[in-house]
Amino acid sequence: MPRKLLLIDGNSVAFKAFYALYTSMERFVNSEGLHTSAMYGFNLMLNKVLEDEQPTDVLVAFDAGKTTFRTKMFDDYKGGRSKTPSELSEQFPYLREMLAARGIKTYELADYEADDIIGTLSKQADESGDYQTVIVTGDRDLTQLTSATTTVQVSKKGVTDLESYTPDYVKEKLGVKTRPNY
Image (cartoon, rainbow, N blue to C red):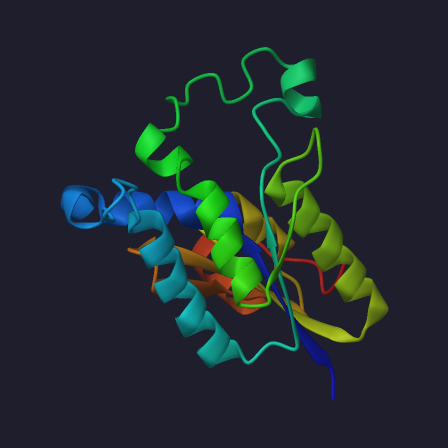
């Protein structure tokens, strides 16, 4: 029986969680004034996905910083994006602590985005033939990783309403075929 690898785009899911609860943000502040909405929403999504998928292996990938090899090549790469709100930025260290406390590994790599890490690991898992892979993200760009052994779940509304992209669903919804494997 193949193992199941769960790869989570940490930054993307944290952003989705933060903005899903944005209008209630002031309700999600602890006694020290720390905003907790992204952590709360992320944890809700994590509980749901762990229960639904029952993975054997889990990794949450994070962006390592603002500069990547792409920003070095293209000055305007993600130039239109607004600055990350401080109410979200302050939660990232605690989000990592929460994941560590739950026994979930995290990974980030200088000059790379979480997408790059997830793409590399999903390809390696596909090539090994030992894994079914589930990717959870708020970023539709990762649907390009869909294959016969990789499903990409994209949050539609909030963080627990996920849309599963399989090769058949990609063909039906987007009108394109995915490769059986990389």
